[in-house]
Picture 1 (tube, rainbow, N blue to C red):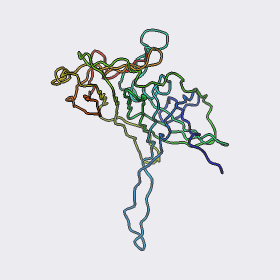
Picture 2: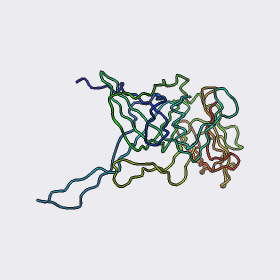
Picture 3: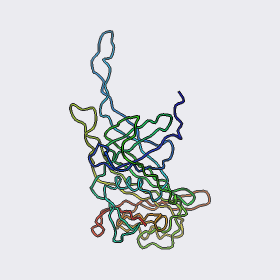
Length: 311
């Protein structure tokens, strides 16, 4: 038996109407993924507390089955990536006023999106693993001046289905728009600060979620969110003066944002209000840098703590 090659693996995503159930119609949105990243099916276990004959164990049983893991990809304007962003932010993409492409806004909120994620192994006979009832627990975007913009999504799912046949859903190819990199970061803004030269950033959107178990079932029947969403943005820029220590003194919140990519190919990321850590000096070879981490807080004016805009 020849088996499969890692290059035979592909992923596709679709939005669920009923959490935990892959829809019968619609489209699978293919996503270009970084090899080696994937959701996985896992369980906890419970051991019998008794001792049986000859000091033997009475064994254990699987419990609390769920999907965990994630996907990493190269940031670009892509339908599957934007659907994962929607799940990460617990919001809905809304039209910002025009009828053309771009300018749509995703505001972080409390409306969860449930997804089915299909992992396909293509060979003489294809194999399909479908992770159902999936939500994004953490989204991380990293980019520096000389790197690609990579975005990863940590996944928590309710169940898994394996099959050797495709569903009736059609497949939509992944976007071939520009894959973004550090050179595509156009503007970075921190409150009233001016004249800064930036070289790296890391954006994280995280929501604590857990599966809900119940009597009489070997699969989760739901996913719940706990606590508050945490949005952080770490920015690294060159040391030029003491402006960071002056402007970011105290606990006053400031707006922070950055754009990456151009019209129809990029995004703007906004923290309408964010509080800063104490600026920290960093030496990186010949570079003298400053690291500052911002944490988003709710803005009454924006109606959110975080939003993404399609350019």
